[in-house]
Image (cartoon, rainbow, N blue to C red; front, side):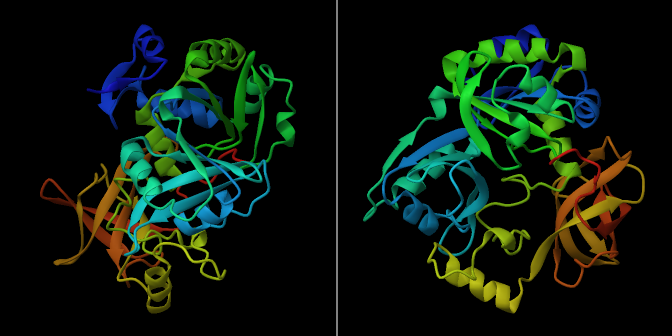
Amino acid sequence: MDKKTALHDKHVNLGARMESFAGYIMPIKYTSVKEEHNAVRSGVGVFDLSHMGEFRVIGKDASKFLDYLLTNDSEVEPGKAYYSTMCYPDGGIVDDLIVYRLRSDEYLIIVNASNIEKDWAWVNNHTAGYSIDLTNESDETALVAIQGPDAEKVAQKLTDEKLQEIGYYSHTSGVFAGKNALIARTGYTGEDGFEIYIQYEDAEAIWDAVMKAGEEFGIKPVGLGARDTLRLEVGYLLYGNDMDHTTTPIEAKLGWVVKLKTDKEFIGREVMARQKKEKPARYIVGLEVLGKGFPRQGAELFEGNRKVGVVTSGSLAPALGHGVCLAFVEKGFHKKGTELEAEVRGKRIPVKTVKLPFYKDGSRK
């Protein structure tokens, strides 16, 4: 049975269209995807992301453990965060995630909602020999995100923490709207913003406070529909669409989170080192749609009669006024400016590979 977040009744009262997503009943939209999308691009929006998973790692070997488990380097300063992939021995991606370093011996890992059970099992299967304590705090944690050019103005009304001093992919612990919170300058929209991690029972008070503080800025609640178009416009990958256990970070152009230049041994290193040297047979690319409409996930890509790829995510980009896609294409067809055709319901739509992100005017700091 699908779970409900602590804010479920708030969404229903706001008239949201609720649907099953990653084991939760989540708001897809409140008004329209376009309206909510544009609110985040031009002003500010608020999201319920309480379906995401949170694992805490504490102990003298916490950093060493994460360096083995993840492809990126755990040696960031306390108060900083980093993005990483977690991989199988064959290089396939278990999940992509964010890690917050809270103290020298304590980290908080944020995993995708659809992968919580799988990730928890995987993490626990690799603890042997490490002096650490692991806790799964997913059910006790709520997450509210404030995103958009006016996000800092809204959030600053609710805390005495000096938010302008918190850089991108940094965080602090403090009081937010009267509740203890982890306040992080992270997000998935390409805009400036904060993700506020609180206890489950504090979620409604935080939501109400954010909505009230944002009134003067025209804040709007935003569903998962606009979250998807926002992330796609800036070329952020979605696990389950653009990458999964059959995809390596090198193929997904996430080589920057694979620390092959260090001497650390991590799961899948050997495969990724070989793949980086020999070059993968396919790459993920951004596609700008040159005709009307847009291909969705699963649409096949052709050069003439030859199939050369498949679309992994596709949508109309509200801020751009035309369709955009992410897709895997064969090596040689991934270069900028390559023109292909996507097959949609028996018709061909012209597309062209472009440099990501599609949308370049975001307020992200």
